[in-house]
Image 1 (spheres, rainbow, N blue to C red):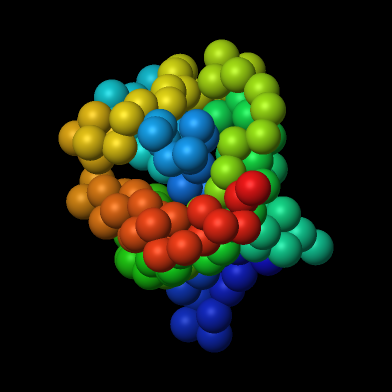
Image 2: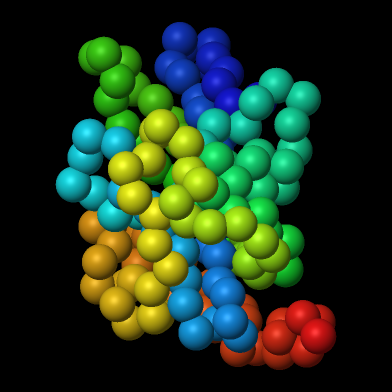
Length: 151
């Protein structure tokens, strides 16, 4: 499901990611992909036969080194980028997640660093405006009463 083609030969990609909090939303997970100076939310392509929720949980575990539980859907992001001269339409779905176990240093080789930071620090450190927006949406969803389900 991660990649597909349209009639025009344009590529479509479907990814999923997590907006992960721990300690009653006092800290939030961000990652730095290997070989980059970007800070972003953990996300990746949805594999064949995998649901968006399964992909999001897997990506958080691979890129963040942690296990998490999905609390709700935060939203979707759609954008276009070019790869090797071809146009790619990308859709990313983000889920709000609660930290369960693991340590940020347990991430895979695709990531140089994973950190849990206080909300304002995490927002400042994120490279992309859209990631900042989704982190804020995740915190709003948490504040709108979803924390009642966490006990």
